[in-house]
Length: 292
Image 1: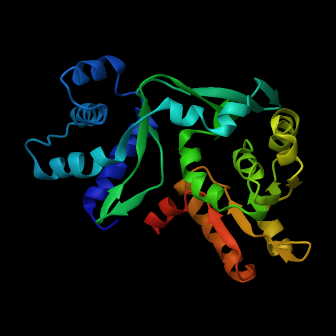
Image 2 (image 1 turned 60 degrees about the vertical axis):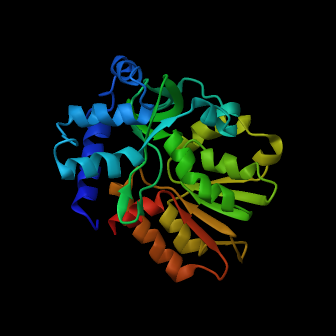
Image 3 (image 1 turned 30 degrees about the vertical axis):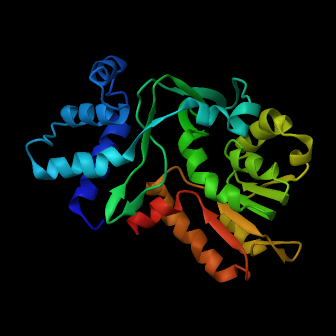
């Protein structure tokens, strides 16, 4: 990171998101916004107070709060995500297979959560974080009772570039809840979608409860292969029947922390085997690159 304040922003957000995501309450927000300030400004001022920052007295705190934190905080509109085709058309039952379960989880009103890739603007870090004014439910897979895979607003926003780029024959490493497979399979410009995932329980839950909800035309485009992603890449060289896939999308990690080594490993295989003209996209790649 080019500036110590950028590191402080990440530390503050990590503390908030991992340990106190519901730090800001609806009551406190109502009191602040009644003074005529925006939701984002009210939210940031409440966070600054809770974390002992003094932006009106200390220059470094002022820069941290107003130059870095405020541009990173977004009051999100539920309607933006309710209109998403996957949210609108795919509905998960409460069911399980062994210790793996399909379920629905919830962000509480004003709960903080990540919502977008990290990026720099004039050497100032932007670490997008969002909140809803009302509770918001999202689909999830749990393993052993703990959140494991999700389709949250963060996934929707950070996958959009790879969704928009999809065309022709698409290879996907990582099934999850089938969000990316669904979003690209419904595109007219996409011919086939091959999804590779190693987890038998995830595949079985997808086949039984999610895949049948896909439109017939999209469903017929999809093939699911149970195999380790890296073994598949080594064997297939990103080829389908001897011809290169048009786009390869990899989503095998939970966050930047566990993503960096897996990203580097797949990038090395890309360097070794990619054909001219192939597109490669990696989930949260811009965020990963901020740490490299």
